[in-house]
Image (cartoon, rainbow, N blue to C red; front, side, top):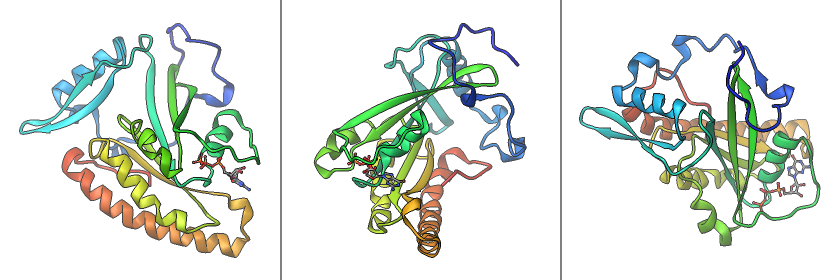
Length: 239
Ligand SMILES: Nc1nc2c(ncn2[C@@H]2O[C@H](COP(=O)(O)OP(=O)(O)OP(=O)(O)O)[C@@H](O)[C@H]2O)c(=O)[nH]1
């Protein structure tokens, strides 16, 4: 399927063009189907696809969830944009993860992130231009208040820890809580990512992964419970 939309900026690189989807994208695996959307959500989505993109916030009221568009992000018409926020302790490798994903480069030298930084990664999904705005936040305590100002309006929260330092895994719960506080319950996809796997032996890596899976299950139970009341989802989030 090709889009008749005018491409924005230079062409999207080939590995960012998605033309087919894995089989699990069936109605049964979807969190919500179009017919489950509240009328006002559908109207807001239509506006979103034809006008200025704002940050969609879902509010629960007596007669169901309502999305209110705050048109504070002025981007060109028809640009689909999702905000990803990467959080975690200092030195765990947030910047490295983002740079590998966006530019396929790795730098051994550590340069602390000051406050926040962001990258835009462009995709083409089934012929439609789509962008991820990936926010890299500082792990250092002294920058936390600056970085947390950018948590709001995230569609995806990636909580990061260092597989060689399990204390950083313990801290992910707090990072996630802080990021969720700035967002409506049930509006974000949550991911837990372990870095620096190359520095561990097979056995040590397995042990770290077991710990991470245990914590992920705990957090999933905790935060998924919070989501249920709002979205009444049919599937499960990625955590
Ligand atoms: N061996 C190895 N080193 C890594 C990996 N990821 C990051 N590093 C190194 O770890 C150090 C910290 O990485 P950063 O990406 O700057 O960490 P950060 O989480 O962004 O740090 P802050 O900006 O202070 O929050 C750097 O020296 C990186 O080269 C990895 O997967 N393997």
